[in-house]
Image 1: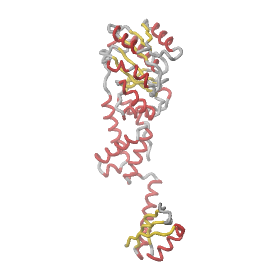
Image 2: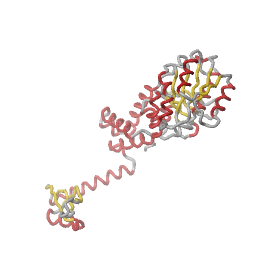
Image 3: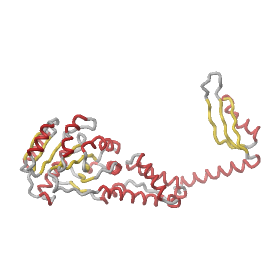
Image 4: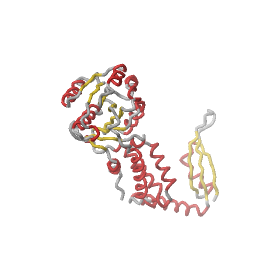
Amino acid sequence: MSVFTEEFPLNQESEIETLLRKKHGDVVIMERKRIYPIWFLSKPRVRIVGYSKGQDSRKTLDSITQKIDSLQTQLTFGQHKSNPDSSIALIEDDLRSMGFSQSYISDALQFFKQTMTVSQIHEYETLQSVCHERFRKQVHALMTPIDWNVARGIFVFGNTGVGKTSILSKIAIAIRKHEFETLRDVSLVFVNHDTYKIGAMEQIESIATLLESQCMACATKEDIAHILRERKRTRYLLIDSPGANPHSLDLLGSLQSYKDEKKILRFLVLSAGASADEVRFAIRQYECLRPDAVFITKCDEVINCAPVMAACIEHGMPIAYISTSPSFTKGLEKIAEDKILDVLSQKWKKRK
């Protein structure tokens, strides 16, 4: 077998195979590349890299053709198990459909290649099982219990329309219904920062009145300092933030007074309907407020909230509760490890 490199004028491109056969006999072209020189006196040309085996070249070409046909047949009938690259590609496609970023997927694939044998990588089901177990360990590391008794209040924040006021109201009603054993008979004070939205204060006030609790408006850093200073004897503060977007840097700056309060639990509220990219962006932008965990709202409005959970796992963000009903009196569920895994498992594609 002899390897050759030949160059032809661009206007002879259609005749290249004929010219090569005349010179080298039967050939196999491995690379074909057009070259356009910068120097204006040089003409465009085609560079060919290939090899010739004389009379045996036809057998080599037939062998390659047979292998290509065999591989195409395997893929057509779903026989991906015999091809490790195909199995990895399927897992990569599954992870992408769940909402994981390419960076996370690349790390996962590298993990598989480092910890699994070649024969294991051949099997799609084995790859899937290892991936699921990796999920379990990552989720388990995020399941940090929330000590409601130690805290003297909670602070919720997030983008406009994600359901911050609703989740705060659900928690307040759950406290009054004694669903939190350590918070029986506490005095509640609602603190409302949302002085922009029409009806926001009235909504909080109506809930506070219903629960026989106090309600305060808070608009400046000085107001925040005053509340934290004067309300030290108050058993529980329920702090609602204004609707915002991650670009509202002035607003985020004004709310940072809460991040140093060790006894104020801080929750980032995310909507189940958000895309994974939107969630990742929100987590990065709100990390300056040091969220302790995440509330996921509007789970009843989507078929599957895997993209939100995937983004939380990717960023090491604990998921505390999910909201599964628009009603203030129900639908607040403490998230379990198995629940997260079940949601992700629903996105595994059925392979035959």
